[in-house]
Image 1 (tube, rainbow, N blue to C red):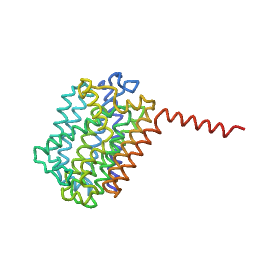
Image 2: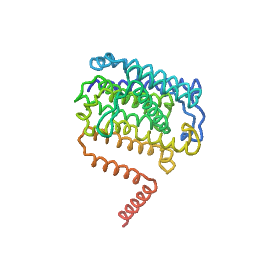
Image 3: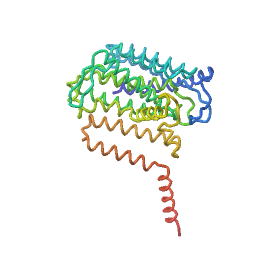
Length: 379
């Protein structure tokens, strides 16, 4: 456990120190475009924060490879080669987009290429669960296609949700914490190396995001840009595929309370907020005859902002939603929580968040509290 904490702190410190250097570099090359109509910030802000995140990630991975326990797990796997090469592909793509601007088709091809690299190095989903409790074993072609699909979906989900200061980094921190907790609990029952590698990768991802957040929380001094959001999506997708690929189908029932549900629900729950935003954006844009990648001001964070919440409060609301989905499903899988109890708790929590944090209701509550205070102090 101490190694995980060490990796979190190392990644956080490395990323935090590197961000100011990257910020100066972004300013020097002009990677701070003018404010667009759909943007929520008022002044031009440097991008390319993902370069610092990538450097912090790679630095910590190299350090992890020299540790006793982590190094032994990483040395016996092609994971490092596949991840590093795919990260280079996605970071180069994001850098060019943040600096010069790229078309959506070009970015999509780059994302597919990054997913293909992972699959080439054996990081792919070997099976999927079926509703009747059975499993469907994927051949190499289907496994590659499904893995690339997962990678592209998660990358774009986080890319779409990266619209407020600190939002993408915070949600990724929550999702990575869920993956880490799930992999740690799995390691108590199974001994697969990829489960351990997933825990290592998740700890490093948490540290990278925590190191970046002080520079990126409102008011942000730098944005991660597509360089960062696509990198986070790639690493998060890799960790999800890794932890699932090391579980034999016949072992699912031994480690999961609801084996027919969890392998499908867990990845969705970890990125529920950005995935909902992605799906709603695709439906919204295509219904208006636009490209699914055409930018607009209809994302979840825009809707919450336009309802009257402040920038910071909107981010915290979305953090809360992400936490409920993530840790609720992890608890369902491993904590012995009855399914009905969990569903009721999640629905209730979402209703509370939606109602009590609504600006009009909050204003009414504040007015009532003020009247009570005046009545109590009146002579």
